Image 1 (cartoon, rainbow, N blue to C red):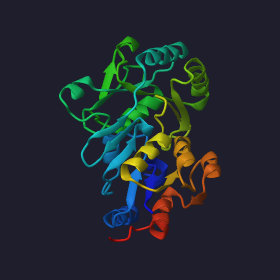
Image 2: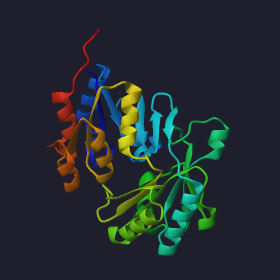
Image 3: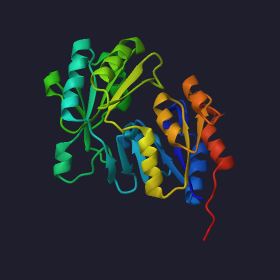
Length: 294
């Protein structure tokens, strides 16, 4: 029986400094070298993923952008993509305008598609991140500073200039009290046409992410795609935050790191060591099944 182990990155497989420890790298790479299937499911793009995983030997399919895409890290190929309907994007941006909230808009890059470059974050210029210049707010300002000189960034001068076609994620970063009314409004006005997740930012306490994506663009669907692509019989997942709950629901077993939110710990099969203590790597070292040689 083949088992697939799927790990969230931030707050789970990565340590508090957003990087893997030497023990985690050695453990994961050793298992992968022996044929164990280890994959990641992250809200990051593949570009951002590559910048934080260090020497981790991640290969094959990965769930990125919270499940909007499944990409092959070995080839750069986009295997699955889910984008929002343009009319829904128009409506969501109108809600943000009415509430005075400025979002980040993630869209496929038409120029990259036209030149047959890889898409969905697998290539360096494959998607764009747009926002209205001068309306960043503390959350977006932190995000832009954290990501550094990112080739995806496309600031615009007006909300009307934000990309609609090919948009797969719309994100706002602000205190929960500011975003919860926006979430309720969007879920009421676009029920069945959008997936909404509101959760605290791992590295910036007090600031929350409101992530809006197409139906099915969640880690649960992403994990099922990974399971099918790799021909696994069962799936074990690891996470810490609300967007991991979707993959907890479809997994055969789910483990929350000790630093996970109470909601995630309650939903898990079990609670393991924290990300600061290499909880996932220690669990994998003790329990991951190395396939028998044929």
